[in-house]
Image (tube, rainbow, N blue to C red):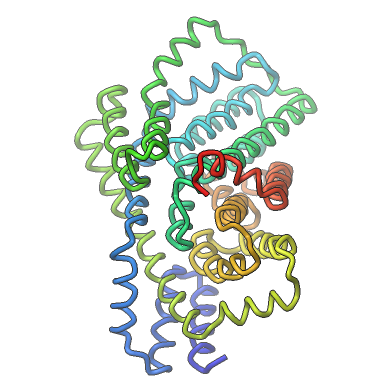
Length: 429
C-alpha cells in the first residue's frame, strides 16, 4: 500500500473508533490521501460532480424518501394495520402475523426499513404488548419484518445499487418480489410455531362486512404500489418519474383521502425529507471519494485477482461475500457497506459471470439482515426505544427470526432463478 493509502486508512479507522459520522471519516480519509499523494482535489471534485450530475437514477432516492415520510403518517399506518388485521384474524398469534403482513404491504409504499419500524412498528408493538405478547418477541418480530421493506419494490437501497452497478431499477424491483414474499412466509411460519409453543392469544375473526370496510378505507394507500409498479413496467414512467408520481399521490392520499395532515404538515415532511436526503447525499458523495481512491490504487483489481486465485466458483464467492457482509452488518451501518464494500465486489462478481441483478438482491437482503443483527443492528435500537423494552430482551428474541432470514438468503444465493424468474418473464434481462 502507498503511504497516502495508509494515511487514509488510519484516518478513517481513528474517526470510526471515535464514533464520529462515517461520512466525515470517509471525507477526511480522502482529503489526507489527496494531500499526501499530491492529487489536485479540485479535479477530483469535478470528476465526481460530473459523474453524479448526469445520473438520473439517483434522483429517485429523495422522491422515495418523501413518499415514505408521507405514508408514515399516523392515519395511513392505521389503515394498513387494520387491513392486515382483517387478513389474519382468528388464528393463534394473529397479531404477530399481522405485524409481518402489514410490513409487506407497507413496504410497497415506502421501501424503507426505518420508516416501517419507527412508524407502523410502534402501533404493532403497542397492540401486541396490550394483547399479552412478550415485549422482546414483539420488538424482535417488528424488527425482522421491517427488513422486508427494502427488498419488495419500491426500494431505496435497490435504487442506490442500480446507480452503483448500472443495472436496471425495474429489473431489481421485480427481482426483489419473490425473495420478499419468501421472507414473509418464513417469518409467518416462525410466528405460528412460537405462538403455539407459548400459547399466545387468538384474535377474534373480523366479520366480513367490517373487513370490507377496512379494505375500502385502506384502498387509497394500497393503490400506491400498484400505480408505481404499473407505471414502471408498462413503460409509461421511468423509476424516477414513478417516484415523483408516488410522492404526489402520497400527498393526495394523506391530505384528501385520510385528512391526516394539512399544508403545514406537508411542509414539515418536506423539511424532514431535505434533512434525510442531505444525509444520504453526504454518504454518497463521501463514498464517491473512496471509490475514486479504490480505482486509483487498483484495490478492486488486486482484490479480484486475489479472490479468483482462491476460487473460480461463483457460489463459493457468493458464500464468502455473504459471510463478510453478515459480519460487517453486526458493527457497521448498511449504507457504509453498500457504498464502500459492494462497489469493490461488483467487478469480481461480473468476472465470475454472476448476474448483477442476482448479486444485488443477495447483498441487499444480507445488508437488511444486518439491520437486525446484534450488537449494533439499528432496528433493534429503534424498536427497543419506541417501546421502552430493554435491548437485552430484543436481542434474545431476534436470533430465530435472523435464522429464518439467513435460510432465505441461502436459497436466493444458490438458486438464482428465485430472483431472476420475474425479470426474465417480462424480458427485462
